[in-house]
Image (cartoon, rainbow, N blue to C red; front, side):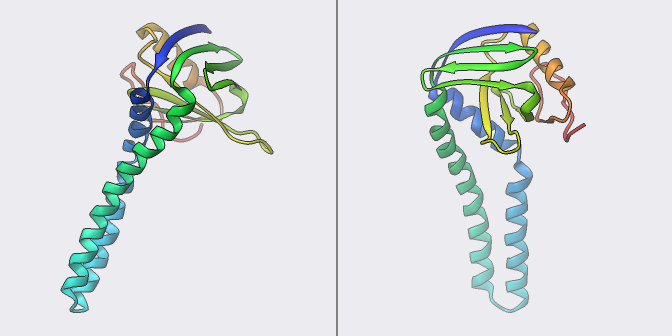
Length: 176
């Protein structure tokens, strides 16, 4: 594989990618609401209706806060990725160059790839080193390049793939 793509990343693109990754964990939001609803039921059973109403209210406030937190995180992440970007995908590594970042991540160190409709987020950590990540926008790639990259990612050993690829097929969840 030898794919090179140049594009101009915007803040909105990067925020959308982070938000899409957060949206993939919709179960977390409903788990929080469920826990607060259980607390509300316990409060009603104990005879405290006002505490039950408060528990339901705070459960939904937490869900809204998760969404706002995703946007804030996206704005923070965007500082590294906004601007003219060059992505080079080879059989050995992902190379990402932005005005604020010059990163090369060998595929041998990648342990997770999150797919969403906007981007691939590649996460890497070797023992004893700081974790690295790279957000690669999908839109600048042709459909054939996306399919080739998704196929390559699916063959990586010991990599957890989450989300859905843009080529229409679901990727597996969990390591192989």
